[in-house]
Length: 294
Image (cartoon, rainbow, N blue to C red; front, side, top):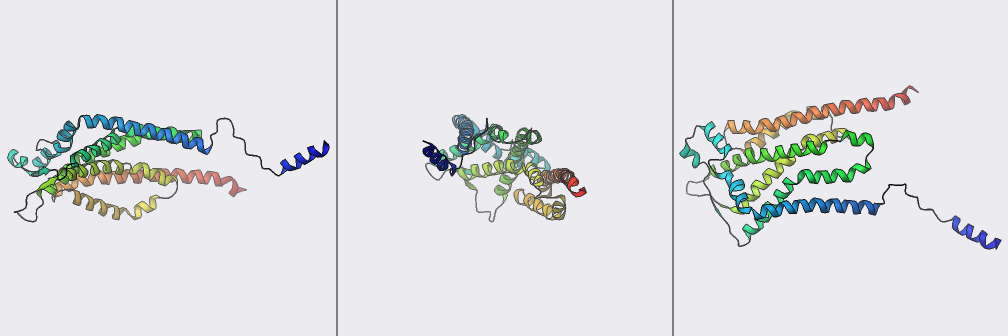
């Protein structure tokens, strides 16, 4: 019996013991399962809102999408006022007939509107689900540092969406409708192309307005510094001017209206990077101080 017990003891000696999980800790598969449910809930919210948009698709297309082409749209009225156009000339500011060139085009574009619109409306909830997933893995001071980011990111996103819808989209549509290479060519646009253009501009502007948050985290990681932004400030101004010139009609007033918000967004990002960089340097100096003095 003593020999058998000794044999078992020697046999088990070579086996590695699996590390025991502390109370409340999750395995890798548990994390994947948790992430799956967060993604499912986010996608469900997008789909539910998308279904509502699909049900009221006629109002969404007529009032929201095609409303950009109407002379009574607020931005178009402002453009007509700045250019000194009367009501008759203003009504002809956007001249284009719309057609669908395939049987499924209107249906597929309605699906696109529903999904993109569902994502835009559900954006705060999607961020909140993402925050719920990463929060348990953060320390208390880290959770406090990023507290409120969901609200800030949502506000910036909706500001960007509004900017893309009320500013960039009308300017772009008016420019493309007025630009001609010959008087004998009429504008006949595919409805699918118009919808895709508006969706890309609105969604893209919402993402672009997340620049301050992106700069914040890049500065926290030490990837971007104020010196880098100062060195490339002139390049940034040129790029912003080119963007304003491309997406607006060929007049100075329209380009200025587009350039100012983009430049202010860049300047806000610069201020954020400066503050984060200064705080990061103080933290590094505090952590290296005792070792240096010793």
